[in-house]
Amino acid sequence: MAQLRLALNQIDSCVGDIAGNAETIVHWTRHAADQGAHLVAFPEMALTGYPVEDLALRPSFVEASRTALRTLAARLADEGLGELPVVVGYLDRGEQEERRYGRPAGAPQNAAAVLHRGAIALSFAKHHLPNYGVFDEFRYFVPGDTLPVVRVHGVDVALAVCEDLWQEGGRVPAARSAGAGLLLSINASPYERDKDDTRLELVRKRAQEAGCTTAYLAMIGGQDELVFDGDSIVVGKDGEVIARAPQFAEGCVLIDLDLPDAAPEAPSGVLDDGLRVDHAVLTPDPLPRYAPETLGGEAERLGDLEEIYTALVVGLRAYVAKNGFNSVVIGLSGGIDSALVAAIACDALGPAHVHAVAMPSRYSSDHSLTDAAELARRTGLAFRTVPIAPMFDAYMESLGLSGLAEENLQSRLRGTALMAISNQEGHLVLAPGNKSELACGYSTLYGDSVGAYGPIKDVYKTAIFQLARWRNQAAADRGQTPPIPENILTKPPSAELRPGQMDTDSLPEYDVLDRVLELYVDRDQGREEIVAQGFDEELVTRVLRMVDHAEYKRRQYPPGTKISAKGFGKDRRLPITNHWREP
Image (cartoon, rainbow, N blue to C red; front, side):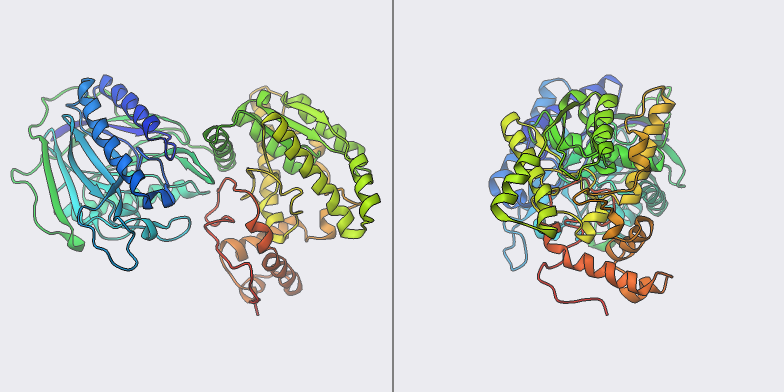
């Protein structure tokens, strides 16, 4: 058996910051070299960031990526790292461009390369291109048609990119046919609730199908509405976990592996799914036996609520930082939604960078003001009060509004005030709407929908309460003050836009509503299917009508952290003008 010390680098790349991403790659390559690594890997499109979306269709961006890759290879060699093979994801283009209808112009490719001795030793493109959920890779890329294999210290290492593992066939069975000793897949697979369990079972299954040790390297960080959770995994050919990296943490996972010696004759020819073997010999001879130092092990897993909360924190932090902001501002109403958003913001940015504004009207309850002030005291965020009554009176005198128009005016005045503060002081405005409200259209356009980012946009109301209670308990367990006052957790939700108003005046109880919404929005079940599961027919019909009528509102809501398999955005694309209703 040959030995190989593998370094899997969970890094956070920023889309378009090619120079900054290259610096990160050099930094972690040097770190891996200092730890005695023999093969170093970085995630899918680590050099360009992921997803690049329509940037893939710009020849200038593609060429910038290709040039940066060659420069990176030379720089690694210049800095004494040239003997260490480095696998890097980047944006490439097919050399044999075939112009035809439906094919991206310029033949861009989601690619990876092995850098060695100052040059590109081997490059390849993703074979399976996903076209579901948030993925549009048929729009952007042309597929690769090779099985890339590099021989490193006497071990044949087959290489793959993300979807190559998620789909049946292709490079996984081809790796077995080629006799690979290790299958290494680099990934930028976005976080979804409970996906870590699915991912583990997938890697186990693919390792058994490939007949060799399989390493799954994943990206961390955030990009727009997507969050990447790391959770890199190495399993043996029998599916047993050898190593598993922390979630949401940047760093290098080092693992010493015993792997089968490569066959004397290099694999060649055309294998499964028509893939042609592309084999490169980097270091043909096995290493002298050495005492393993890094034996793997599994990092402690996060609980379900902690995992979701951490994703929300990481998503907000990435969005704020990568878009050049230092602080955020939020309207603090004394309700559960803005309270949870404030807690997330404080954890993401630090309370000194979180500004909260109470904007009472004539209908605001005394406890709303005191609860907001108490949350500010507990968290240490910056807090101020800006009454909207004078503004409201001026509008009412000019417009003479009543009913719903009068209620919504209050919300829109608050949105205007937050945007004015943002313009004056440079804070990014956070929108506190949750998935239940957005689904039903229970929000005011240009009012509580105002903001540049919605941290809890993909979180149902029942989960809002669960996350708030979890955050308080986590603080108590650490001997800290829980950030969210108990009264916020126990009082009935209300928009407080008219006397005695409660959310249940317009919506069903949230525990029932959210179960119906999950079936309709997340699982695409129809009215009859939902009713068949025991829900009241009249209630289901009413909820589905609210969802269908609110599409125009959701389309105008800001982006927000995606934690479910189907968030409001690219996952769920329905026409705004739509006369279809569930029968």
